[in-house]
Image (cartoon, rainbow, N blue to C red):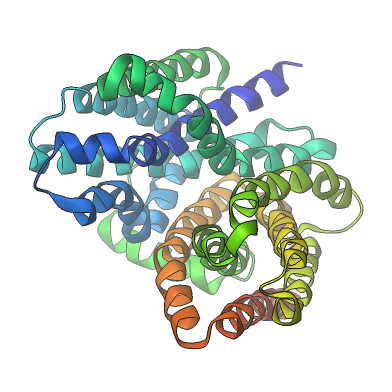
Length: 383
């Protein structure tokens, strides 16, 4: 029972990490009014700069967490996140706000690296897949909750109130995890040359790198289709915008967990990509009709299977805690690469080729995800 309380507390920390993005998104218009003259691009950068830290330093964070220990890293990240959010509630001048967002990126990165590692350690072996799938839902669920409650908080308490609530959430998670997380022992900070060698070791390993090399194909497609597909679907777009993330999370937490008890996580990732690739082919004949909603929902559900199984593959492929931390760092790095590049790539393809560009985008990256995992599996056989 205590292990599941710890898992839920770690998941709540993940919700707080996702809110480091989501609080800016839900307050986008209000922040634009508060920082008049900056423009929509600058406020958009305020959202994305947190992910830039993970893109640059994702694997470095995994290496550092592996050295200093999960508990120290998580507690420091949560306290930093609470302090930064409280400072942001004062709405400092724009350059200082951006510096605060960079600091928040450090907090975010540490949480998303530590979270899956600590959950994998806490979960009973028979329930590890379910626990990792639960963790994988933190981002989509947070956005859904903030879209529901965020406007009310903003209307009643303004931007400062929203950021205060976030700071309290982060601090509350820190206090709970201070009591629940097992103590760890640091083995020393990595030297600079150790970091570079560690990066090479991560991406050369077919065990450590495999979750991330498949996950990048998921993040490239998932964020892009949630952003651009509903707007291009006409009357069905509003329903698709709500239903697609809910179907993705729901299928991952139900059928995905059941399936992880019967096949390996890597095979589930490949099955999810195969289902997404097949559904993408039906977008061509059905596009422009109400029936196009069906393959769109199938794609979302299939990618939900990929999402949960990608995190579940970390402990399945890497029994050592240090290797799990490195794998989580690689997922953070390549995942941010996917979220950064996917939307502009799809926007360009749809501008040039319409639904054909959309279908080829989904099909191509899904097949690439299958192929990358097949290549890593072959390399593991030779290792």
